[in-house]
Structures are given as C-alpha cells and as structure tokens.
Image (cartoon, rainbow, N blue to C red):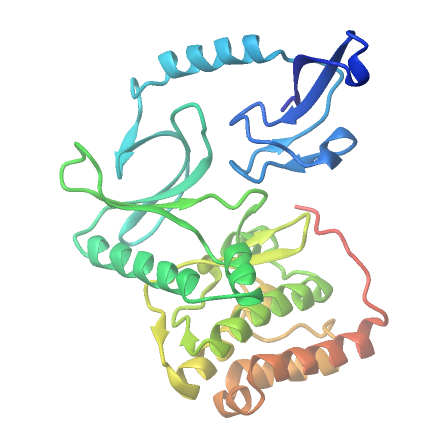
Length: 333
C-alpha cells in the first residue's frame, strides 16, 4: 500500500509573497489522516484499518480519485459472490466446513474493502446459532469499558453482519472481520504436527488461551465450547484467538468456567500428544509441565480451585523450571 502526498499552496507568512507547499499524509484507501510516524514506518490507518507502507512513489490526489472512481464502477455490486446485510462480498477461498456451516474467506466489495470470515449455513440449525453468536459477541464488546474495552476489541471477533444471504435460497450467514495473520485452527496445527508439537510451543499456546478465558471469566461469562477447531493461531506473533461463541453463557458460575479451563487443557494435551496419539503425554515433555497438564485436563476441581489466573501462574513456574528464562521460539509451519 502506498502513502499519499496531497499538495496545496498558501502564501508564505510575513507577506513575502512566495508559495509554500503543504504536505498532508493521508490514507490512500479512505483518505483519513495518518499519524506523523507514517513518514518513517508502516502504520495502520485508524479509520479503515489498512496497513500503509511508505514508498518512494508519490500518488497525487487527482490520480487517486480517478482510481477510486474506476474501482466504484468495477465493483458496484456486479459479480459479487455473496450479499448479506446490504453489503456484497467476493469469496476468495474456502477455509473449512463443519456440521452446519461452510466457512469462507471473502473481501467486501467496494471502495473500502476489508477481509471477512463468512459462515454460510448448510443446516436449518445455523440461523439460531449464528444469531446467538452475534448476540454474545456484540454484548461482550458493548458491555466493556476502559482497558477491558480495548482488550475485547483486540481479542474477540468483531461481528460485521448476521442474517439471510440475499438470493441464497434461505441460507443464513454470519460475517466477521477476518483476523489478519492467523494461519489456521489448532486442529489444523495438530494435524500438521501429527507426532505432537514442541512443548515450548504448547506453553505459549496454553497461556494465550488462559489469558482470554481469564478475561472472559472475570466478566462473569463462560465460553462453553473450547475445542481445537475453535481456536485460531497466529504463527508469527504467537497469538491465539477463540471463535465459536454460540454456546457462551453469562453468569455461568464456577462450574461452567472450570469446564472451560478443563477443555482448554485438553486442547493443549491434544497438541502435545499429536492428533493420532493415544493421549499419553510423551516422555520428552518435562515432568513439571506434564504433571500440570495431566491435572488440568483431568481434574475439574483443580481447575475450579486455581482459576485461569492461577493456572497461568503455575504454568509460568513449570515452564521456567523446564526451559529457563522465556525466549521467542519461531513456530515453523
């Protein structure tokens, strides 16, 4: 993405009569002003979310506006693959399929495109589940304030639209903003490393899951369906994002939250043992980490006693005893 220089002129101060060139750094996608740091490094547009990289090329406002007009003519709803909530989306690829859904990666059609993850129903039960998931996520986002609001915006999926697919023969859709950089689910990661992942990777994956669950439980909610296919992994940044929120409950109580933590540990255990394994933790996993993983994945009362924050503290202690000072280990796919 290029950065845009917009040139104008003004009379110089003190009445000297010479012209000055004013430079405004704006987003080439939506024309919103960019912060000053865009002069020397890549920035994310605060308005449309586009990643802007500085180049030596200069795009004038006139040529950009002409390109914008061409984009509007080319993408004015014509040839769109899917329409929901009054917007059109061009399907790029299929991400996967489940019992009630086909999941697609798509781009919103128009002058301000963005990537979206779209679930399209394949069963009648989809409508109720999509509506529930959208309701949960919107309530979680709307009910937060301060730092919790920032956390929710960064870590929870953002609902763009939910409702019938226009002209889709009674199909329903749930449109979420696509999380950039996420490689795939933990289920896919387990399949890729069928003999089990390095336990050092299991540590940060488990910690990211515990972090989200600790936040969620502190708000009085439970996820209710923590599974390998309901967690996306960001390989480069070592991030994990929970999806599949249709079973989430408010005021769930300790029992529901303990079940979240138990299932979270079972997800990590699957990763460590491998998708085709017997569930027995490999001998190569350090004993302290192995014992914690066994307790957390089998004893619900242990999870209830410690909670997400307590399990994270125990995990950090076990990891430091096994591997020493934390360091970044690239996950090579």
